[in-house]
Length: 311
Ligand SMILES: NC(=O)C1=CN([C@@H]2O[C@H](COP(=O)(O)OP(=O)(O)OC[C@H]3O[C@@H](n4cnc5c(N)ncnc54)[C@H](OP(=O)(O)O)[C@@H]3O)[C@@H](O)[C@H]2O)C=CC1
Ligand SMILES: CC(C)(CO)C(=O)C(=O)O
Image (tube, rainbow, N blue to C red; front, side, top):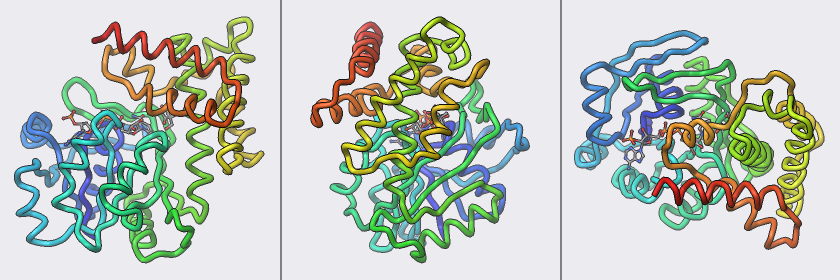
């Protein structure tokens, strides 16, 4: 399987790097500044699961058509931020042929409509990841915690397609914790309801879960945010299974937990954020279903004010 990884940031750099480390045919599609970094220092992963210093194949958009003409790509692992989705779709388009699958591991859900419209729904596989990772100042990939997993699956529910089976085999070869799910919509909603609550809560308070729940009313805040998101999942026809609800609730209210959403890291660094894609979209869906979501609404005001101040 020939894989193109769009982006060599926190998630793409980590998972693409692990695949490359295991000898998988991986090419990173990056912009010129990142290409220069990769050419000079390679891809460096710093992780509790093991460091790696890798020379990786990479290309910029202008070189991609020639590469795709040499041999078609079987799968594009899409790992951009959602505010870069349009440019990322333009960039990967020359590599998306008749037999190419596109597997996004972005947070949220709204990107699927854009990907379906651009490439056709049959090409787009459902996907998500769990990891805390970021690109450091020197371009190194910093894996900030233990879990690092990818979940993927056919959105039409085919448990055992050749492309998901082949990708699962490569993840196994690379030692990547992975799940090929027959219910990817459910997995997406489980992650999204958890992540939206985490991002809304930690950004609103600008603190980790542990600091929030140590405050009077903090646990109740995280619980109530989670309930708002779970109500949306149910209204959208994908109620989150009780075991996943309990696991997410425990994580969102765990005393002493250093966990914060990647959105808070971006916000504290003064970077662009995926506020509308993650918190705004959850709130829009709540409103469309007539669900009262005052905490999501407050978080969304906060994120918009941040974006306005940044502009
Ligand atoms: N980081 C985390 O811990 C987690 C993130 N996620 C989600 O994963 C997604 C990706 O996040 P993350 O990996 O952190 O993001 P990063 O910003 O670290 O990496 C994204 C990379 O995509 C590259 N990129 C964007 N547009 C293009 C383009 N047109 N051509 C080439 N490269 C492009 C960027 O390049 P450049 O460097 O040139 O800007 C950047 O390096 C987000 O939706 C996020 O919410 C999910 C789970 C955990
Ligand atoms: C919650 C977490 C860390 C899980 O991967 C995440 O997706 C994020 O912060 O963006």
